Image 1 (cartoon, rainbow, N blue to C red):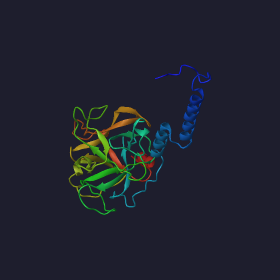
Image 2 (image 1 turned 90 degrees about the vertical axis):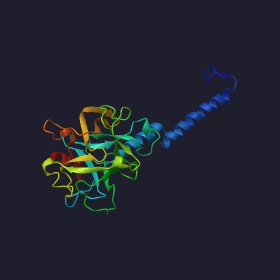
Image 3 (image 1 turned 120 degrees about the horizontal axis):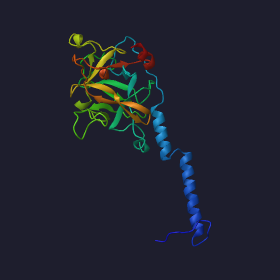
Image 4 (image 1 turned 135 degrees about the vertical axis):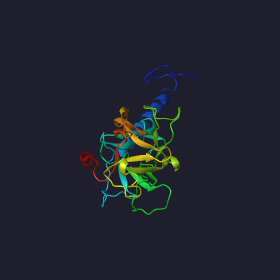
Length: 268
């Protein structure tokens, strides 16, 4: 195959065709740029759409209900459990993809990456029914737009399948409903945990988010901060952290937040 060794300004051989070809390449690039079809533009647009602020309604009676849109707030670090994708993965994606990781972000603005919908896992309920302590629920991203309708998922840690930084039980977003996506809310006070079984789950109050299959609590690990496309954030795992008194450590302290997360964070 012949290779041109001259600058296009040197008119040798099929010089006219070479110039026309390079002009067509430039025209094609400019057309894709104008239409927003360049890979870098697609990635930027997707990541910006995920961050677009969305209204988060408040609970009228202070109780959590099926169908509610909520944020999962980590109380000690004042951060929200949030989905993210690598810049490379966002090149071809139009919405959040299965196996997308989650982290705990200190951005307290409700948006697609940190809003979850509460639904029942194992029984037929009506939208608006009260969620009760101990009931199995799913936590999914928004189904419309770029949310993808993915479920918060966790499974027992193995040598090949574990959190990237802490090597603990990882938490991801998946698109299939299995027992790995079943969670339940537990009362924050261990002395009242049995008594409150079946009682309504309050919003904007401390509680524990427990993974049904592995019986591990959701945890945000401040010591395992890492960089994401949205800044430095904390790794999220499913790991029950206990102190010497067999009480859950701050890494497991969460709250289901509705309304304005920034105002609620200041109330703890």
